[in-house]
Length: 156
Ligand code: 4NP
Image 1 (tube, rainbow, N blue to C red):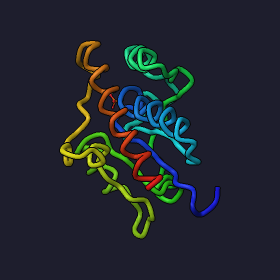
Image 2: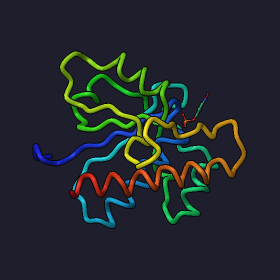
Image 3: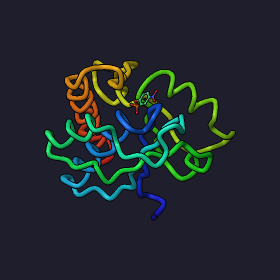
C-alpha cells in the first residue's frame, strides 16, 4: 500500500449488520469508480467474532446487487488506528468508544459515517438488529448514500 492509498474502516457494535453493509456498499461503489482503496469493517464488541453477516443484512445487500456473505466479523484492534486513514462509526456510541480507544497520536480520522452526507451530519445509522427486515433496507440505503459521497470525497 502506498502512502497515498486511502484505507477505510467501517465500525459498528457487532460487525454483523451495519458495518458489513457499509463495507459491501463501499466496495461496490469504489469498484465502479475504479478507486484504489483498502476497505474493512469491524465491531467495537467481540461477541460475533468469526460469524458471517446477519442473514437479514445479507438479504438486503443481495437485493442491492452486492454479495457480502464472505465477510466475517472481527473486533476493532489497536493497530487499526494506525493501519486505517479513515474510521467511520455508525453511531454516537461507536464514535465515543473508538475515540476512547484510539492511542495518542494515531493518524486515523474518526468520524460518523453520515457526516459524509449533506443534511445528515451528526446523525446515526440506526441499529436494525432488533428491528424488522425493512430496517435492513433503510440501513442499506443509508450506507449506499454515504458510500457514494465517500467516493466523491476521495476522488475530488
Ligand atoms: P451491528 O448490529 O452493530 O449493526 O452489527 C448489532 C449486532 C449484534 C448486536 C447488537 C447490534 N448484539 O447485541 O449482539
